[in-house]
Length: 242
Length: 184
Image (tube, rainbow over all chains, first blue to last red; front, side):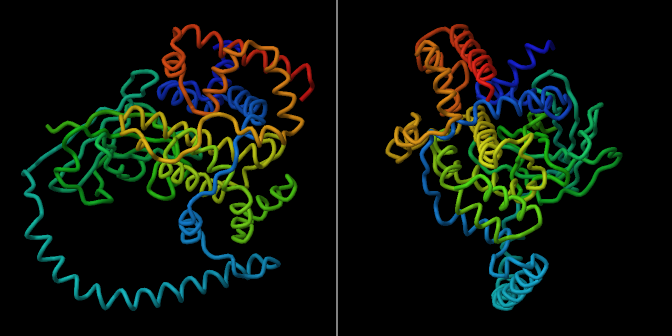
């Protein structure tokens, strides 16, 4: 790629005109090509003033509360960050303990009911049902990972055919649906997986049938923090029953 | 909203100060939500994007540097826009339903009130764009404010995709050269 082409791609990435495949390619370049990453930063600065022309719109109050729930309250002294952490952490723990006591009473009663409902309604698993997906890089149209899911054993194997996540980044596996169902994370891709690992969530046959895509996203080290992909999709392929 | 104080808040967040995080949220969330909703046109999607943006700020505040990232607002706006455009592209690929017809979302045009109180940087950028044909500038603004691809702009304006690509590239080149001359 010439310097001119690199600059043009960086500009269009920042502007937002690239389609999904081109964006995924540009996002990968940001990770691997320092000159491209610098060009993107330069264009971010050049076009940033345009954002000033966007008027503010008050977000829903629930959004702040969701973030407070995740991060914690700010009710400690700002002068002592350590103390602040300790205090809010302690308050958070005592609040959680109180909540847990209340919840435990209800949970014990519900558990028996839930167990009987679970056994009555669970889907019959076809013995030995196995699902596979070949995950290709949309930019290069090359298969990078091969995935196998054994439903009965609730196990998964993601085998790399060459690619590895960049340093200080993680690849995370997702089940994605085209019918509006929320994506499910199946955990991080191990660097050199050789055997099947237990699925982090219980999957049913219905979770793997229909138009289901298995995808790998590029995430910060350790994966997406809230069970929702934060980074670009770098490999994807349809799930098929064997 | 002084840039310096936002910088202090981000430094505080990098040190794990929740108070700084909440202050930053109160000072900037309406702006970031405004940007996200203009691109996504759906409140629930914009809410998710802004939620993800603040979590990213919480986890990556230590990576912010003024030399590379520009002002705090530029850095946060970039995270928001990139995330919103990624969601928009995934949404288009998954062919999710469009927003309900009567949903109250702002238009994709720049806000005249905000334009009236513009910074020196925005004035310089607008001065550069004033030399470009209005049809060309329109392509650039449709992409920036609404996250349209070349194809979507072409469809919206009823012109070939090649024409849109050419207009966008010329306008971007003009911005780059003009602002370089301007020393900004």
